[in-house]
Length: 296
Image 1 (spheres, one colour):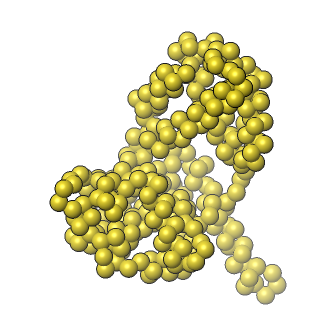
Image 2: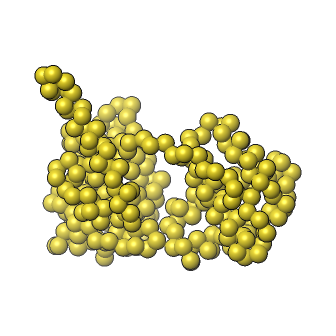
């Protein structure tokens, strides 16, 4: 079973070019299924049947997981067993006939421009950590980068003269994204007076964003930093990296950007993924209308 998982991980890395974060998520989902197999006394992948897959889904539903999470785990296991069939490790895919739960169509959460203004103003950028935090926040909001893309930015990916950054997207699909003056100034200040101080004299690497020890910043580290900043700006509030990506897209559309441009900037392969933000802008228009029209 361990060898099967390792082979699948290598397949995701080499053939599918999945990101490190995505592969970690697949591993956790499969490890969770292995734990279920152990609890059920199943010690062989070949002996799994459709009923076992259904029972696993019942267990997931019993934990009150969201439909989105259950659908993701099911899709992961379906891909895993499809790979095992290709490698002739198993004969059948017990998840092939399992139907995915219908996705919940919730609108993405974003921050208003005023909220972002308060967040930026709350950062003390007079010290190396503050300069790093401001540069991190500016990059995420200026580019709409995914958290993994932000963590992967190398020094030579930045061109502060042209005002662009090269982002390494899903499936090794790279894209150049412009950055504005605020982001350029924050990054320049961090590179001049912050990054070197955090690295110290004993460490040297080319990753742009670093933690307080001077090591490359991880997605988990980014989430912790953003939550801390948001809680400081608005007590009791949390901020996830994807909220900045959602804010980036929503604000562009609200201010007149066309859908195709936003699609390119976000690195979406299908425009349907970008269209969700038009629903956000329409909902915002409706709220403004209801709040301001005399006969609303």
